[in-house]
Length: 293
Image: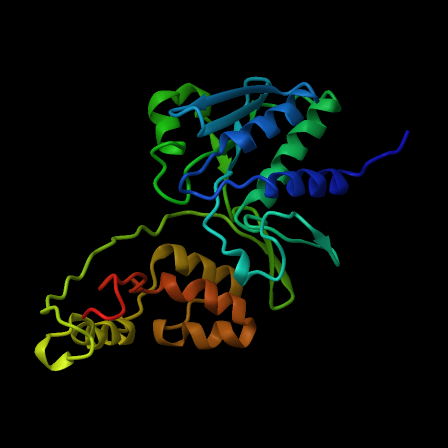
């Protein structure tokens, strides 16, 4: 009987997950939840599906332990949209090419979904009993709103997801900075504040721009100002802790990025948005016809 390594097992499960189109909206995360349930139950893992809507299921798997602290592997199965015309390979193929798995969600975050599922399944097969419950949550609706996912789970099924500690997306990953290994964790959460800027004009035919008042033209300098705005950098306690760990000291705020770039560009890219609030124009909506202003 052939022996399959955990690495191969995780790659195979990842490929199968990637072949399921769970672009949100509409999500259809039940496809992934059913696949994971079948895989986990085959190893003796206790599995529940919770869904606000039948096609948008959340999976909660549990390896029961003793009375110690509980740990959750937290992930989501929905993805953002993918345009096949912009991809070198089919975004729902799950192809393995030169040690790389291709597909929408391979990085965000069906890779971690597969790894977490294989981890808990392998422990169950080995008869492992943890000090406290080990829980795996593969939630729906992370990319858009959480109304069908983790927020709904916490409100409607709190006991199913109540744990002492959680490893979430990006948490626990190993990175090397300046030749030294570090493991990431979150001590705070930076939140977003979306806003809409409305610019009024006067409609007209595109062949006669003089009779119109083009709102797009008026919006352009405003967008440029938003992009050019650079808030003053400040060092909060979370960033200070990072700098102490990585640099061994806390340099002045205006020197932080230069010091980190000298160590590793990744460190500067990681910390830059944490030094101040950021502004990112992302969407614009105007005429629905190219000949109408």
